[in-house]
Length: 117
Image (cartoon, rainbow, N blue to C red; front, side, top):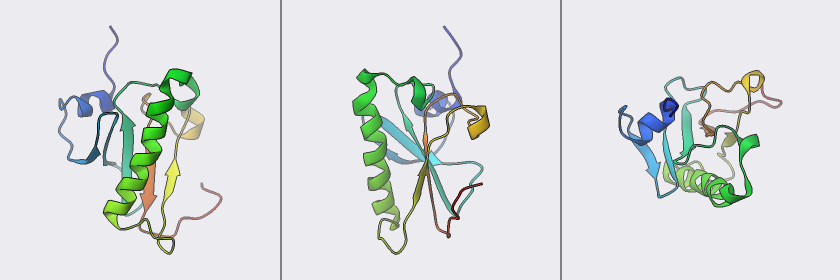
């Protein structure tokens, strides 16, 4: 059996991290290296290494990630159109992936430039 990812250890409560949100399919917590005043990682409890490796059976989990983002944004008071937030999914090293466990970055709390860096 391969070693657990950092995110699996957080989900399994082996590494402490206060959860911002949790349901049956996903968990969310603040990024330890935030790139915006609000930077939450939304992680599926099932290990999917990266979005390009998801299979049709992962459809409900993939949808749960986006629905959770909306719930978290509402909870944090950033869902309003005049505030807003950005969702980012990195796939592979060149995209900035550092943990091989699919996750969605929810970024907010400042003006976010386009195109991103």
